Image 1 (cartoon, rainbow, N blue to C red):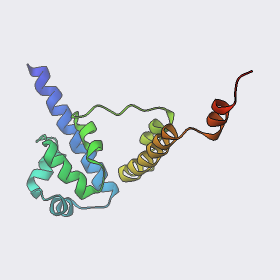
Image 2: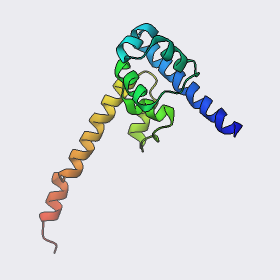
Image 3: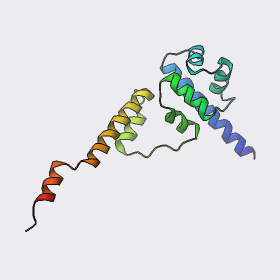
Image 4: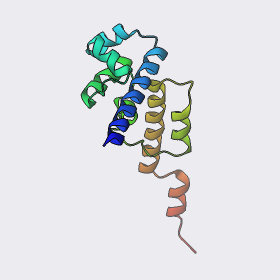
Length: 134
């Protein structure tokens, strides 16, 4: 049972550290994020220190305050599994010079192109399909 408690503390610490890093990158003070997210300053501080493990709803409010995707926080908190990737999404997610918001925008654009291409066959495919076989 102690191992389960330790895992819970590790996840809380990890999400807290992740939130702190995102806040630091965005150059937002703890007090500012508290106001933006609608979460009390002491509670947010406890989350960042790993003392409290936030609910999905609180994570969503924090994500909104940080202007990042709630999904990114859910993955960090262990609520969601890491989305399936591939070389391009993995490269985007691993780029430490991009903010979470920039990563999410790039991933959204990339996925929209992929959906568009799946929906409409390329001119090469339609030409090959329309030519009769001999």
